[in-house]
Length: 187
Image 1 (cartoon, rainbow, N blue to C red):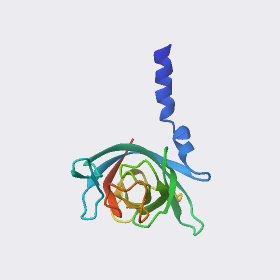
Image 2 (image 1 turned 30 degrees about the horizontal axis):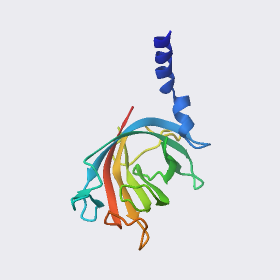
Image 3 (image 1 turned 90 degrees about the horizontal axis):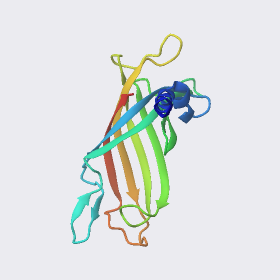
Image 4 (image 1 turned 45 degrees about the vertical axis):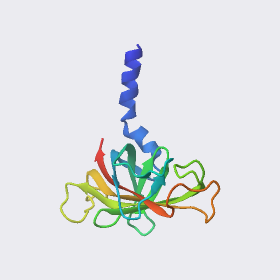
């Protein structure tokens, strides 16, 4: 019986009705995706000073994976609004551009308990493109819906800042950026 319960739970986990519950009201799930994060190291990247004076980048080369749901809704201007829904972060909106491009933006106030030791504010952008079987621009289906979205790719940049004299003092080189290349594949 326990094995049957586990199997049913796995089957329900993939149902669009369950996946769509992460989507904002008046939007519909396009699909669920696995986002693979790959650390990038631009000149202004965030670094942390460890005990002994060792300095290492905050962005790890293999940033792991995270599940996300893409949702779509009608925008007030007649276009489409795209949402990226991540269970622990909520849903972030973006206009869906004609070429399949997007730009999700978010921010958080200064938060204590970061690897920098000091309270850090984060301004986040995730810009990129949806991928699919189309060639060139993204064409809507005859019914106004989206073509199959097989994945997405883009760059996530977290801009970290702190107050001029934070307490406790920062062990990071703020202001700085934390950058990840992201490749998303449909689950």
